Image (cartoon, rainbow, N blue to C red; front, side, top):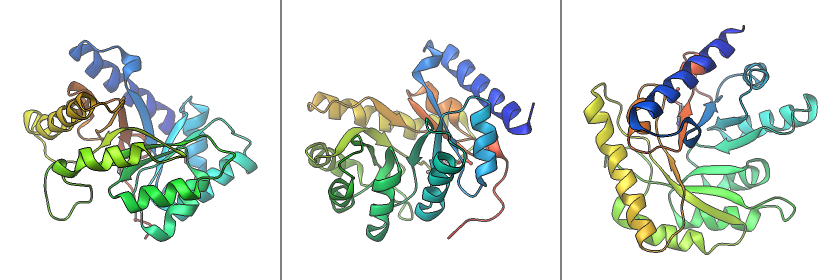
Length: 235
Ligand SMILES: *Cc1c(COP(=O)(O)O)cnc(C)c1O
């Protein structure tokens, strides 16, 4: 078994354990394998081990892997998620290559994605990113802006609003890890109470997936625990 296949099994076991501890069915959490900075061969190794959904954070690099998997390697049923921050000049390439976008933090970006989504493709599945820990440095909309932004995004053609995403401050304490995930879940509940039909909480990374699953994550985004430590960040 390749190292990637073994890591993937270990991560799936962590998810299954966390689900069992919370009384959730294992299928209620999807694993998104975050392959940013890793070459297409790593994606293919994970795909050979059964992984279908992949996350990328850099538009050009990600689109190149989408094309390589599809054309060169004929792996046509992978599902590609764009999880990075999105600038206006990168929306077209993302709208053309990805199935999901996780980090919508302003209406302008959602409108560009909607306008640029090719007519032949299914609607782009989107999440609104919330700055749930409130640090000035992180992207994401403010919790008190989330309802209005989600209501506006939900009306756009060619997009389908699926839920919320967050990247809390890293910390080691389990209870402290849970707190921001709980706030995101409660925020999603208020959106549902306001009439939005959303089903996704994209939260949890390599170091805190157990806390995220305990608070209701439906997608966990895992890079390091599957592919190893990233060497360098692509700009
Ligand atoms: C890189 C990245 C991840 C994966 O983080 P790991 O700690 O490597 O698991 C998850 N989400 C986002 C938005 C990322 O940019």
